[in-house]
Image 1 (cartoon, rainbow, N blue to C red):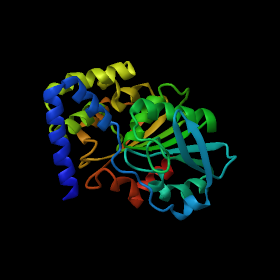
Image 2: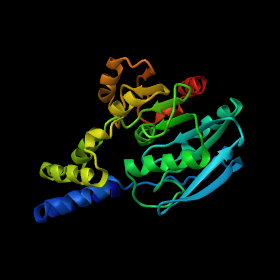
Image 3: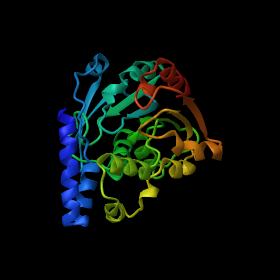
Image 4: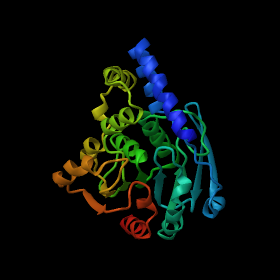
Length: 278
């Protein structure tokens, strides 16, 4: 009931703002688009309590991370999605340690135990580059949802070759789709969209369709395992069909049915395939 009341209030607020100034309403909409509404600060799983705590400053954010099995030649970085936290990926850590990896995991800006209120794909991408330059080189990556989009953008800037391995689990494939869903959910006036799109261009130097895993993955040299569910209601399967059809030689797909957007990375059979791939 409380969530429904809040949603009703937000929709009414944007209806009023749109009547006063479409540009201002679009600015507020973009700010909300970049603001996680939930922060995962559940108690640390046991494996995190055993890890080395890492803290560092990135822009105006205080970042919290963890490291296990330091000093290994191979390193893997775990990246979570929007409104999530790396603590949700605890099941992957021990198997990766057994595989001889140094494991790195950080809460992204404005998430989990890191500070901040807003994030966007450029900030997340630059954050990954900072982690890579500070704690790397890193040869393997496991990324979910929004983390998959940010990683895809980062790998266009990080020098890498076919020895690198990337697992994308239900990546946020198309930002245009995410924006469409955002507008539909809040019932925003379509007349705001040109202003919203212009804000993206002004802040990043790119149009919304540039923020695309489908676009960026063509520039990868790494071996990629892409895991996606046909019933994902957050990152629609329809967005990845053109990538499947392209039959990129460095990309293999694992398509599931009925696991959705989040259960997919918690499924034991999926985590085993991911670990074996890495």
